[in-house]
Image (cartoon, rainbow, N blue to C red; front, side, top):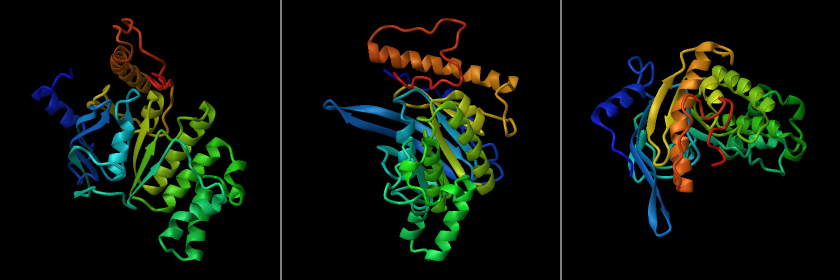
Amino acid sequence: MTQALTEQERRKIAEATKPASSTEAEPHVVVESLYKSFAHNGGRVEVLQEINLSIRQGEFVCLLGPSGCGKSTLINIIAGLDAPDRGRVLIHGQPVTRPGVDRVVVFQDASLFPWLTVLGNVEFGPKMQGIASGERRAKALELIKLVHLSKFANAYPYQLSGGMKQRVAIARALAMDPEILLMDEPFGALDAQTRGMLQRELLEIWQATGKTVVFVTHNVREATGLGERVFEISARPGRIKHAYAVDLPQPRSNSDPRLLSLQQKILGSLGEEIAKVMQDETGLPYEPQEGRVAAAPDRALGMHI
């Protein structure tokens, strides 16, 4: 049974989950007392429990936690693709009730249209919006240049590597000119070298466009390398266990002792959640070894549980 939060814990988390500049501007995204469950074997499985957080305009935040903790579910609810059982999501103070062009999701699978070229894929959204051909073509070419794929504008998806496909997916999302970019483990299936390259490119895009980014990952190094804040979500039912501010300038160095210290702190806390998941899955007691972290910070912690 999940232990209820104390009032002191509630106040501490509420304070930690406020955006750093909340005194200067109204938050862009607010999640209030959100609960979500799903039907399972004739009953209900609670996935998210009392999620509260706020994100400022133009902020880059990461959602981090073990598999099954509800990260993707939270992304889908913010996107308007799913509805909570209780609670709500507010965008600029307005409740989210359906998908909107102000929010676009980039998934782990690029899901490009195989019959369209790179240019055709990036143009598709603006075309559906009724934007004139000349304007949307110019916009698409600009975005293709932004993701460094100008030489492949006329290539088809089967001619691209996995990393190139994800760059097309990001350009396609940006072509809709959303205020909020929701990214559900977009680099999870890529090799380490390609992943690092796309992380750098994503940071450049974020700095150039000023979009609000909500990024889901299992990877501690990725979360602390990209995010201005990292929200750690507990094992199911997912709750905001900790909010970590990453007060380090970009680009960040993996050898920075301040970053390494934060990664070790997060890994220690996540190790407790991994233990809960393993015990729940196997029915056997599991305790991380004292004095040791659960995994290296560039591991996808809990991904294969």
